Image 1 (spheres, rainbow, N blue to C red):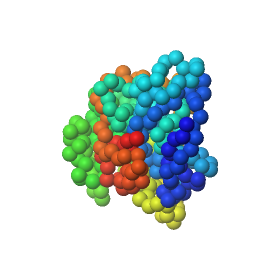
Image 2 (spheres, helix red, strand yellow; image 1 turned 120 degrees about the horizontal axis):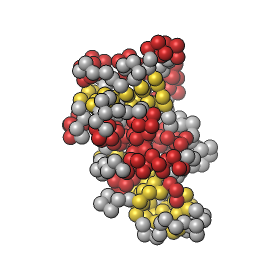
Image 3 (cartoon, one colour; image 1 turned 90 degrees about the vertical axis):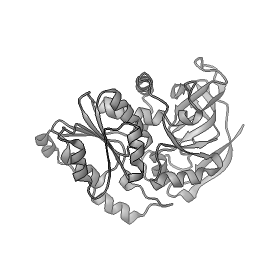
Image 4 (tube, helix red, strand yellow; image 1 turned 90 degrees about the horizontal axis):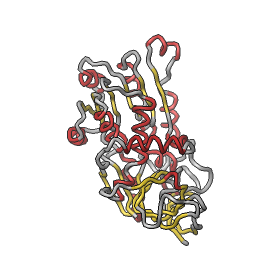
Length: 338
């Protein structure tokens, strides 16, 4: 069958991303074929398209890490799903398509009361937030946790998970316009990442110990968080938004300057301060199927409400969706409907 995809012949620029038609074979014996209904956008998509992501495939590739849709065909060894089932899932690239084949182990059932857009807003964010908070961050009920990009997909789910665990949450955002959403999401405190960030963060901590930081910004924001982190505190790094540029192609000189001025930590000093920094890239866990499924089950067992879909675009308007997403002006998840 023929399918429509957004693909790049070579990473490096958004100008290289084009809508094309190609043939899609039948699913293999352990795969399902998905009729994609919604696609979730992630910062990894931006970095991959611009050629700044080490996991990006060489040569022609299709971006996209998460999706929702309906089972269109099933491989002969697949017994957990049937044609017509509503599902959501994760893929190591390839989601910018109207149909895709994927190993059935990477597909999860979509709750009956969730829309396809909500389904596409959940898997990557949920696994990222849970793994950062609990598997690495060892979050406990009495902890104070700082969550950057608090109005985004990961940030909102991280707050809901942390609040259910009894933690005190502080959210940071790029502009004051996003504060109202953090109030609705029941963050305990909220601040804008501006020139007064350190003073504002100290006030938000209110004499507590800052135990855990979900770090996805980098640069001076990282340095400030590390400075205010309590002994035995943990920083979990899962992104580096400071390197993102709202350009078709990245500016090499600006990237080099940011790279040369990135935070550098001394392990000996870290020992004396008794602080820890951990980092992960979810895509490198993709081959750990059993682990990913177990983490996802743990998230589902939290009975979280539907994720917040902040912006929706049609498939034909993928470029406009990406332009808005990389502007940093979004709240909630950016979804492309197929």
